[in-house]
View 1 (spheres, rainbow, N blue to C red):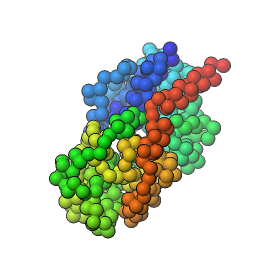
View 2: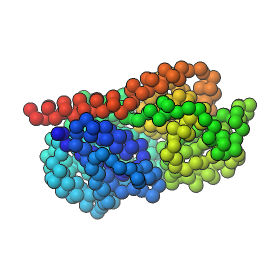
View 3: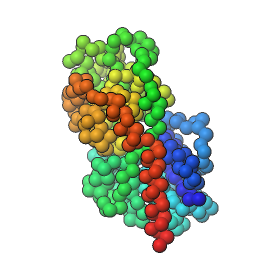
Length: 386
């Protein structure tokens, strides 16, 4: 039995969800999976507070998202200790903090195969706000150093793979394999149209619902979304559009202030964290993102699986997600006028959403992704045993 240790900085958010999903499916395929995770941040959604996994999990309290030299050193020590006890065949890392600590520990303890999946990239301009110029070089150089002894780098889209190799020079192209994120899409594929959002917020049954599923973090650029919606609403009053913001995060007070400043309180609604996203999309006409940086956003893939219209800024791997614009409308980031225009374009199109749903399931369904990962794991183990 192949023993795989997955590591992730914190058990919350999209990367954690997809890591757990993959590990659970590969456990059924005969792998022994162990997940080592750090501590949650204040604003992290509690995705897994009542979740029972079919594999072992280990909480490393000293591993946190931000930089804490003493805690990070302690976490590295515990990783080394755990790897010596577990003796994994593969260490597969999934985020920045664990990606550094777990890979160093794997190298120290002689783990046969070391991998790093980039679920998203944090090296864009202004990603860390005013601290970007200070923090970005640190992360870039640490990643480059660790990638020297990492056996394979996994990108979640072709575009992200080019960014890893060409834009940020994190590793050489030959070391990159593209494996899409995995999803359980059946709840979205089976969802039927409803009016639950109209009923919840007391809206006219004929009102058009635009939904943005994104935590209130700087990369999601909610101000861009709100400005675009404000312009779209002014130009298209006949469809009575309303915007639903699903999520939580440290920028929520700013988002609430922007809504007041733009006088949008009668047409923009915050739901907080929601676990019923299939039902949310079933009650929506369109899903949008206005992000200034992304990896491969699961919210858009789920929206496509639900059979609704999609509009997004073209960042990260989103062009791949929207199949070069054949599954949804793309526009430039940080440009609310372009985003408003993209909304109008998408509403004017009559796409074959049933066909799109089938193709999304074929590409991102967990069984297909697990099969790709199984082949990669076995290839690397065979290669490193020679």
